[in-house]
Image (cartoon, rainbow, N blue to C red):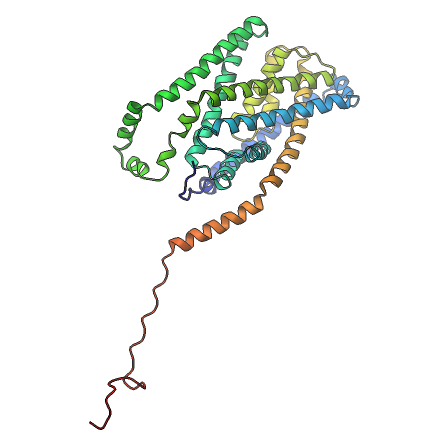
Length: 379
């Protein structure tokens, strides 16, 4: 469904960012760079020199596999976004994949530009209402929690991946996904909707919202989460992404001559990915340091060399992300989007500005020719 009314500017809040928030973002970003430098210094320590020398002898097939897994991870994340929004609006797959690549690249910088880029592109280019985008992002986060939550919780108590682990994780994820679907469907029932509407109507702001053009989209998030197809596909795609991200660490460790079990690689990948999502200052440095620190906490063999593994994963991912984001920007043609947006704003201002009334015609002068009566002087 498309919202015919003009949506508010999603970047208005960012333009009003206070100097204090700017300083906090810059300080946090500088801390991330410091953590990255620490991780690099640890990877270049003398005890890791032997592993680093093996990088020069890495086979092109291994490097291609590592890059291919990074491409697969970005594509899978884009497909998760695409399947999540389909119950309420059909957004072109190419637009979602290109936007996801651009947003992934912007995760390297602070100020939440990654999220703002998703909102701006999908709202302005794909005409997705802002409330629908909010529900869309919330649905993806909840699907992530329903998938990674059980895996991480069970892995902390049973770190070995075996048949029992697979059974426990599978059962927990089915229960979590079922709870999401049932909870969303409960929220869409008439009694719950009537109750929430009556509570909202008690405030002036609530009444104003319910009378606005945005109100029909407030339940879009619940509609997405109530779809077994969207939730099931999201969980399946997230599982595939977990496997791809864990495999990256196994391949990178093999390139450096380090043996890394898949269960340990999964915990490293989950930490690496999770920190990249929740970090408010951009993912640069924070996830590398977090994954390297986890290797120490888990007493992984050659834990000191895991820093080099993490940096190799980050380097290949950054290269792939830049290439895909560039291709995504070419596909979306942001300059055309900007020109169309300027034209839309100009047309809205022209419609909202009332046309100026024509100036009243001047009264005829008594001395002007043809003025007065048409009678002759010979009365």
